[in-house]
Length: 426
Image (cartoon, rainbow, N blue to C red; front, side, top):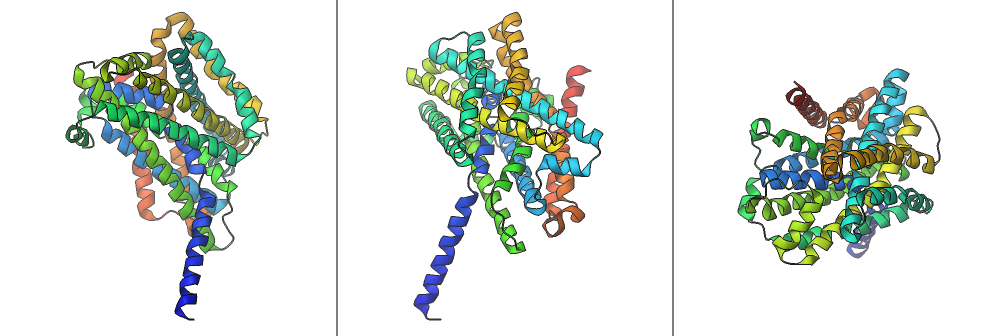
């Protein structure tokens, strides 16, 4: 073949590969919004104000574990055509499947609680609406979401991308205003044993893990991957697995910078000025205005918080439908799942606001993330086990080093949760 024709053929092949990759872009970014929701705001602000940059390594480790688990979700669907919930129902007894469904549903409710409270706080900051009414207004977003889901996945993915860029732009501008010391920042990526000995640090670290590696995202991603054409041959399916993994890795890397940015912002503005107990999101908003010398900082903060809450609400609803249909084989209307999930989150929120006062809301936000962390193992364990099963996965069984990292990550998640229980309830 002449050189010119050969070059044209190579160019056409590269363009074809790019177009095929772009066909897989989307699910990773839909999943990534769960890694920068209001729960992350609460844990990152608490970690930065109390411990400075010391917990940046926890955010990095959590993000690497999230990338690994999302890759395993991709691998499972490409190999079997099943999402994680469907695979659990097929492999385990009805009793075990129902238990895993309850655990997954508890995680979705805890996540939805954080989204509801975060959006209500943002509405209060922006418009002065009392939290109790903001929570009720936010609960009605089920109607907006129902309209959006009827437009299809591509519309949802586009909306999510706009909201993610909004969050990133707001946090980026605030970091430029805060001007953190880069040398001190980099030290925060060095792991330290202080997390096990310093009072309160393990609690916040667990919250960061729970807010970053979100269990319902494992069920959701393993389902969303199935909306793309994997191909028929083994080579095509391996290519699909690579593209879907790359999509998730790009999206979660983006989420890492947002999460790390929030903690760095809190450390630079609050911790290093002696304000080590800024765990209230509303207090953080007020202090940002004074510390950064412009009201723009506080407004950007509130806009990004509202965007994160509404963004994560989309994936929470989708995950609820996936686990319900996958575990129980129940086909239910999206609005019914959304109403039930939001009602389960609204009740404790209203009780805390009404009985304990608005000042206890941030504590509830932190606890919602710790609950996510404590039940994360119930999603990670079956995922790692099934993707390492050659009889189920065939040629797509996870390599030994991937399985090893998966088990190490699962043990870390389960072990830290057990440590937390022992230390706080002994």
